[in-house]
Length: 313
Image (cartoon, rainbow, N blue to C red; front, side, top):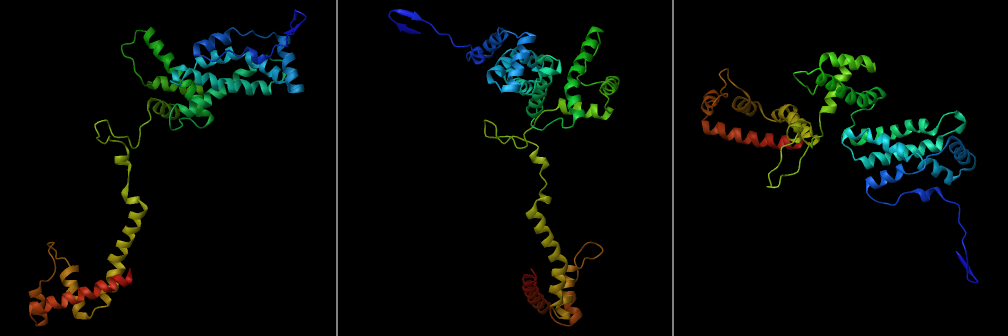
């Protein structure tokens, strides 16, 4: 507005698409605002699409996006059953909408609403798969299709059972229902059972934090840990095995015949009844010496073997 000689003249700039963006607020205010945004006619949509394609007109892209925000809200509402925030679903759907606007060709003969639905759902699907569980439940195309159809089909089976006044309501699928799902989605029966198991389970912390009273919570880490395959334990086990076989053999070879037999009879032989080998008195009778002399020979042999084992290690 310019003031000249007491006369007010007003100059209006062309309205920008981004002026249609609702002010920040809660989610209900956002949804209410986008539902009031004007929709485009076929001629307007094609005109803006051509301006974006030919001139990379950002304002035209903005008008195409703004006019379809209500579509994102509608599609995102269909996925509330997965337990993820509605606002996050809308945000991911908006990303898909912007990708669709960028790739939209007005000469294809379809409306943007039909073209954008695929991109919006694709982004929402990807977000759900990444955030629904800590471990991704579906990786292949067939598994993704099964994941997003199994839940709705189970709800349909429950509705049919309720309408038929079924006496029991199961959370799991019956054999007949599993066969029906497999036939309709063209997947194996085992794949349906596996996906249902994945969806019915939840995330479990391997090592849960201690409780408020300071007690350590029990978690899978307590029974999943395998100390026998820990690298340090495996190395120590191999070293013990080597010392018990080759090491002992090398140490015994360093002894004279009498000392080696005394050690073998005292420590390395076991009788049929599970008892040890010969006693000091038995060996003393064999060699015609006192039991004390046999003990002295044994002590000297053990010291020599210990030194040999250290050198072997």
